[in-house]
Image (cartoon, rainbow over all chains, first blue to last red; front, side, top):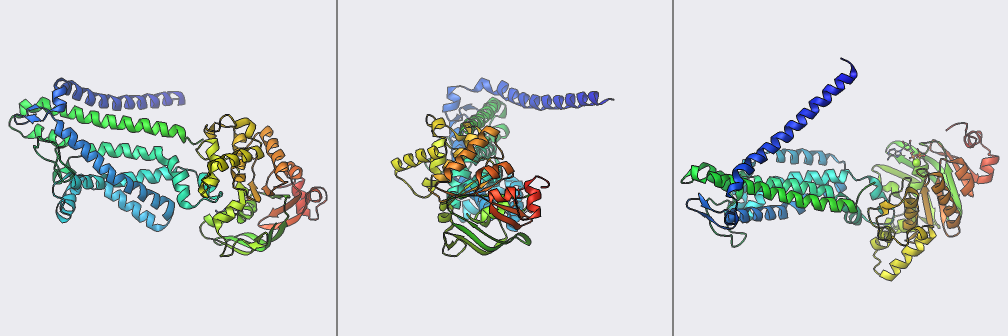
Amino acid sequence: MNRKMKQALAFATFRLLGVLVVGVLFSILGFIIYNGAGVINWKFLSASPEEGMSAGGIFPAIVGTLWLIAGSIAIAFPIGVMSGIYIHEYLGNRWIVKVIRVMTNNLGGIPSIVFGLFGMALFVHAFGFGDSILAGSFTLGLLVLPLIIRTTEEALKAIPDTYRAGSYALGAGKLQTIFRVTLPVALPNIITGLILSIGRVSGETAPILFTVAAYFLPRLPSGIFDQVMALPYHLYVIATSGTDIEASRPMAYGTALVLVMIVFMMNLLATVSRLRLGKKTKMD
Amino acid sequence: MIETKHVDFYYSSFHALKNISMMMEERTVTALIGPSGCGKSTFLRLFNRMNDLIDDTRVSGECLIDGEDIYSKSVAVDELRKRVGMVFQKPNPFPKSIFENVAYGLRVNGTRDRSFIARRVEDSLRAAALWEEVKDKLRESAFALSGGQQQRLCIARALAVSPSVLLMDEPASALDPISTSKIEELIASLKQDYTIVIVTHNMQQAARVSDKTGFFMMGELVEFGDTKKIFSDPVNEQTRNYVNGRFG
Ligand SMILES: Nc1ncnc2c1ncn2[C@@H]1O[C@H](COP(=O)(O)OP(=O)(O)OP(=O)(O)O)[C@@H](O)[C@H]1O
Ligand SMILES: [Mg+2]
């Protein structure tokens, strides 16, 4: 086989694999839309579950999931970004950084059910938050912390030192350089971490199982110490238990579709802001 | 006036500058030339203490600016860096507007007065011979400028904090010939107000812009004197070979 043919073959293989991946993605999406679109209407989005969750809507679960996204990101994002800054800009190349990196990577590899258990022990019981949005948010926050730290670090690493040097050479201090030059340039990439985190948080079931999720709670939470329903757990519940699984099956697909749409919209929002920021702070 | 007395510099165990004594007078241009890796940039970075940012480095000897030892404990590094501006090899404007790039040094040093900042920005851009080209687009991104304009912006940015010394590390090496000659003209005009030290690999450039020239080799200052003399009748054989392009 000559070189041209080999190349053509390789490209054809890559293309085929690429198409395959996209194909799988679209068939999952298509499957959910095909099965779920039928049940989605205004009532489904705005009402509480009825008749053993085989009718009515999923409004409390939507609200619950939004609460948990907001809560966990509010906790994990600032802490994660600040840790990333500290690790990259202050610790630099010291051996401790390698230790921290190994630890955060391991933390990221722990199964989420273990986070759930830990969250229950620490936040629900030891801190006395009870089954609550607060406990759930902390648990989910811990789960995505390594991701945010890592992306922040990578984003900072991608910034050429010439920016920092330019700032120092004008008499700026370290903190000024970070907040006025480094961070604005890194922000678009940090937001990528945020996008991934939101996706992760909204889909996780295990960490909220013992910390916040309610099996059936057809009202909205009254504060951060209240329990909530959440979409992934609700999906699990109506797909596996309930009074009439067959009857609630369409509800499950509808719930899945709503969950996917929420994640999709969050991603879209973050991508748009990423692009807008990127345009303002583009590196040559 | 800048003066070094028996300065040695180490990158951990590597002896990068060896016993350098040199004097650069006020309102003159001093060119530093020499083969790659001989320590020109290291020497230049002594004067605004940018070498401090590199881990595990050591300096000994005296480094005086206007008689003050800039490595003494009482010197605040950020204050020093306002007095001693620096222009880098590759233009490195911040990802901000043209205006904000020039205003940056003032802002980080706590200047709030808006009309003062606006005035300084204009003055600095004029001094860097860039004002006419950018006065209508001060709010646009600095990245929209050409490489040569970006470098003049970086010069304006350095001038905005009113330094007395300007350090330039191969400021034109990334630029086209026209931009290069603009930078050279600019250096000639800035000489009236600033003490300039410039590193360059371009012999003609050193001959054109500088009053004094120092030739470095392997961390040592081989010869230092009037540019005319260095280029026409150097004392040292190695200097003669280098300026005639026979090595390096
Ligand atoms: N950060 C550093 N750590 C260790 N050694 C360094 C560092 N920077 C420079 N050196 C070494 O010090 C010596 C002088 O470097 P310097 O950058 O000052 O040379 P230069 O004359 O500016 O060279 P060029 O013309 O290529 O810019 C070189 O041998 C270089 O390898
Ligand atoms: Mg150099």
